[in-house]
Length: 509
Image (tube, rainbow, N blue to C red; front, side, top):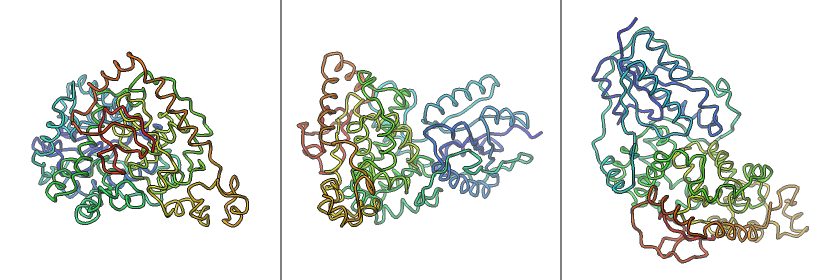
């Protein structure tokens, strides 16, 4: 039997720097750094092998860092309460330390079970904030200033050392096969770990991010010009506070600083209302969509017949990442043109995103599907988006190689080729590349009619006002809310995403 120890439960905070629970626990006695691999979590429909592989690399590096401090990371496989019960029998738990987590519905339920078990055992617990999300927040008034205060607080150093604990075995990190995760090829996935995160942050602040505001919207430039830190923020190899302070110290683009604020703003929505993962924010949209499995599969496989849409989906499958505007377009096309329920398309994207962050993801799914009741509804034109962001077809030719020889005049609209054109381009439609699933212009017109039909009426506005009060941004922006044909707002830089969270405008772009 070993004496009682401080348990630091690592979840999505896989670092030793700016980790308050670890530092505070180290001041109270021997520390057991614990990570629980939860097979039931990885069996959820929003989890994937590519995510586990990234997480596994983060854990391997964390293991090395903790070993250097004197006490290696202890890996256990199973349910957290079962693992903690075993540790209690082996020596005793003086206190459980962790960061607050805003995850999916499964982790919400798991955390409740752990809290209940700790209470029954009389074991104290201490949770610390991990980012700018405020727990038990009743309204959004003053949220921005609270976020700024947290981001401006002094960073927490790593402990100088950890007292070792003997007699505790650690399991090996399981493989994807051992977790029964479906085969998930992602050849150009980002590598996990803090070293990779800091290298990305340094290169972004030093050179890659110089044209961030101008180059974040096109997939031709975004893979280089975006920070690519999203997966590292998801798994916590760096903290939001670290990134925020490094960015301000290096006088980074205001557009990127805005995105850091925006990151926590959206997670705050799910923290305040967990049902947003599975229910329409505005219940007037209940039942409006009915997913056709054939359309969902064609969209998910990058076989819609719209070349730019398919190129984006295939790039995402290959790399585990695509820039934000293209994520919005993919969801918009699924929701309005193909009339797929956002929960179905959202699950597909959740598994493909290495940087899947539930609080951002599900709120963005609803935002792009138009079910929030308070946001701009963007019905992206899949052809215009390609012409705007890939005018020479470079991105299409890379990710849709069956169209490599299609002339540029037909590349974005291959159905305009006649039989001879198809033979010369070695791309016969319906054989080498699919015909469009539907007429995108007619589908957009029908979607507008359906959306406007729902949005009429006093009861609709009353519920929308309540949603705005609970979740809407309090930051004011002067924008012209008249409809445009460009998919953006007047007085806003072309190609930039509108972050005004109460604009009722319906766009086509």
